[in-house]
Image (cartoon, one colour):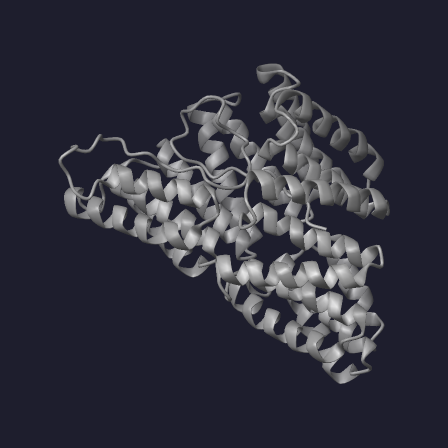
Length: 430
């Protein structure tokens, strides 16, 4: 199941309270108000693009972000603070679309320009460090992401203080990166420090405090302490329902994580019920095409497999693939993840021919973006190896598992639970 970490995509870094949000659409606003006589109006373009992006309509948002960047470049030059804000926003959108190669290039260019024109400690420069780290993480370069997170955090602690909201946001992102690396012993004290500070500054029921607690629960579940995580997940969900309402997007994130927790601990019936509720609410609140709705569809298919309801699982998985392809395109990593889930379902339903073709299709895309060392790609390689072994195609299985072991050794620490699992599976093919 997908455990959804709360990440921050930084923007102007001065909005107190606007930290630890859901993954997504933090955008930079221009420093200079444009003339109302300018046509096209870059502010109007930007606002419309942001609204589309927040609804998950990435394809429609992209040309507006590109036009906004072109207008500002023409009016102000390539190094102006507003032009660089437009560059940042376009790169974030491309990241959302799965176009990570171009997103990486633009973020790197934006970062260098900001360091040169604004200085290494300027809030916008630190925002670029953070947003570049998110792209590196998506590409599977967790070591590179960690280095950028640490640089930004060190600068923030030095310039704006350890208890500034934006410093706490960066502390959260560093802890998330360490958790993804399997460095649980390093991540846990950061999460606990984060939660303690948030409780002191914001109070125990503040959404930002609950976000920090939720990420701590995710870490505890990953490190193999589900019962410590259980009370945190339940408390976060119930508090969000009371404070924010049952259909607030952040409440639905807590609901999705609680459902994932129930699945990870073997409570499949409860997990299915929670996912059904989450999927219905996300369709109602966010829309059928929103990325978080699509994530829930994938998890719904997974839990239906675990419950033995393979017929409904196939229907949900096929709907998920079709919607991903329509909304995000055939090459988006999330589309390939959905294809891999459908392959898992068909494998378990006894349709090996289509399952094998879908595994190959998904891996062809995932090897390119986000790359071999990314956890999603490693997971699909593992499932494909299981499929090949089940089909008694042992030479092919060994080739896939050799690729899996090499990528896991490059991308995961030796003690990471997933790497241990992959190594153990490889031993069964000797």
